[in-house]
Image (cartoon, rainbow, N blue to C red; front, side):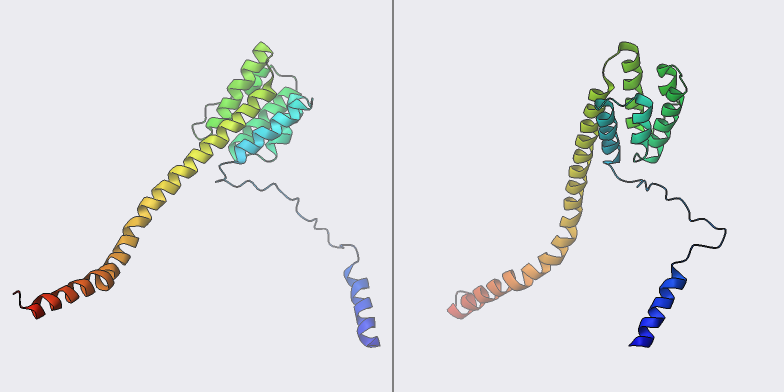
Length: 185
């Protein structure tokens, strides 16, 4: 027992020392799932909450970019950097059209209008989050409907022979036996 305690103490003393190699551990990078349909909605919720709490637009955009999908995060980071440097909000949010990021384009249009008219961007971001959620729900329902149609064919091919063998054939055989045994034919 004492040897095991001594070995455990020695292992703890040796193993918990500072890292002596010049290699630093890698910084963790935020994980951005590419196929999450609700990632944009959560990003817009964060943006809305930050703006609603009184955070400046560049800081709120940077905070929301940390959890946004890749293209939206790039757009938010660029806009936040330009706004922090004092760029015109219309110029900061004006970026190249991206057909693969329609939500980011909607946010940019809304932010440009907000900068011009003085309307609150927080409410618009919250509405955009609701819109993204409803679109994701509709897409999920459509996918479930397609899946149920695609599943019905193979299930029908599996259960139809079993139904015929276990349900129809015994009834027909029983009726045929009764008809042939009664002398009707």
